[in-house]
Length: 456
Image (cartoon, rainbow, N blue to C red; front, top):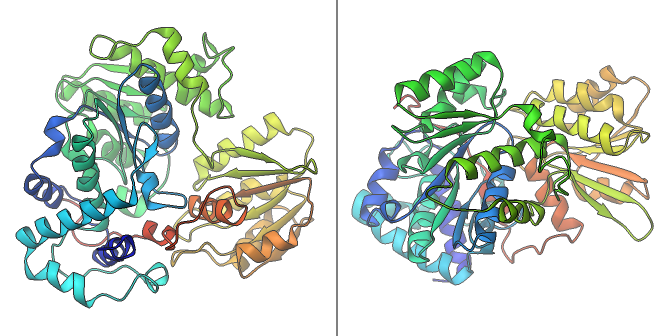
């Protein structure tokens, strides 16, 4: 099998949608030898900040000398970003080998459905623009298969710790087949209401579903109604609970620490990571100096990432993709660029609260450039434009057919902010040559839609 064929196979899996539930993942993991039983995890859920907190914990424990696996999603450019060991991306040869193994186990567990998958689905050249759909069967989905691929790889690599990020929600997310050393819930905000519920309480209940009996919980959630859900779940599971308040971001060592990730919200994520390290110190000893050194070296692109051009121009990439993320972006822009009126280049997915996101961002901008996201779920630029003009009637708004066209027309704007979707940030990183694009277009692997029963 070639790497292109392995990516083809992963694209084909998207046609099964993204079913919430644990049965398939448990069954596939069992066929793979239950690699999760050989590993130690820190499991991370939450609406925003999961990836940044995961990157911080990975950096801390790697600085302490551990061999650390990192599992995150979505990827920005290349599929291999999802599965890393000591921040080394999984090699293409390893992806091929694991896909071959997965095909064997899928054949054992799902028989003819797996064979049909390999022979009947169109090639990945059409994959990125094709809408994932359910075939009506119970075949494992893309995320379920990739979750077990990661478990198998981390076990083979003899990782001493795995930083394990949920995909969607928590309770029924494929990652929830593990029993971790600690469960971390960054915050609870509105996102994915169609699948997690339309109240903060219902969303909190899904996130709190990662809490396991007797496993300590660390959270940055302080909103009373959501914190109460986490407190009740922790009590029911006899799990200790540590709550990290916003004041912790201004206390030592974070009050003087030079964190590479900018913004007060990242200081709060760092406080959450430090509290997790403290809670686990008896099992995973890390000195305060090493923990601080790990934070000072953390790298997580696409989150208020400032690119300084030789001309003095600045391009800022931020993957804010929901209202909570945009609120943090607005505060961070006001903190670091208080006198600036940036040009805003934006694309948003249709299933987000894009009207509110435009309402928050448009008043800050001197000019707005609107583009479609490379996704079937994109919001149309024209609708975004109307929302932006409603929020800021004086701003100049332009619509473009593509991100490349918008970047070409952005000229030499002194500050250009690109935001609205992590998918868009990944495409921008390719076009701006900030990341090497793989030979096969792999950003389309991020496409998904939930199908089937979500209550299992």
